[in-house]
Length: 130
Image 1: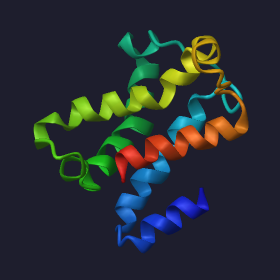
Image 2 (image 1 turned 120 degrees about the vertical axis):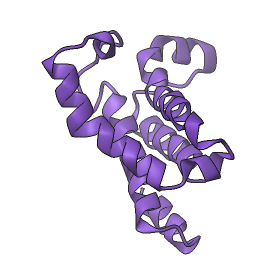
Image 3 (image 1 turned 90 degrees about the vertical axis):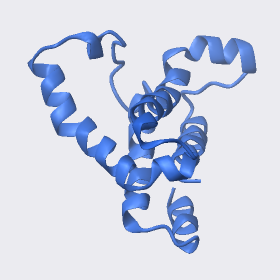
């Protein structure tokens, strides 16, 4: 991960952009059952105190960092498409772990191995900050 951050810095990315990249990696690594408890995909559909805490404590900051990092410019999209890009890329971060049995059968890749987690984190981070 340090090599990727160094590469971003060498390309002249500002710390805010690096923060978004680092945030993306943390989110991806947190999606893996190896590094955290499995999460229910339905949890985000509940409007309760836990959802409010999750959004206010974690997601708002990530969304702000990604918006400030120039995601619209990076992806060549309109500013009003950022919410769609945020959730599309966030889904890309965790889907491989949510369907790990499919991944193993289809591709032979076990996404729960530490090397696969690191590779996936780096890949999705490059989608945010190429």
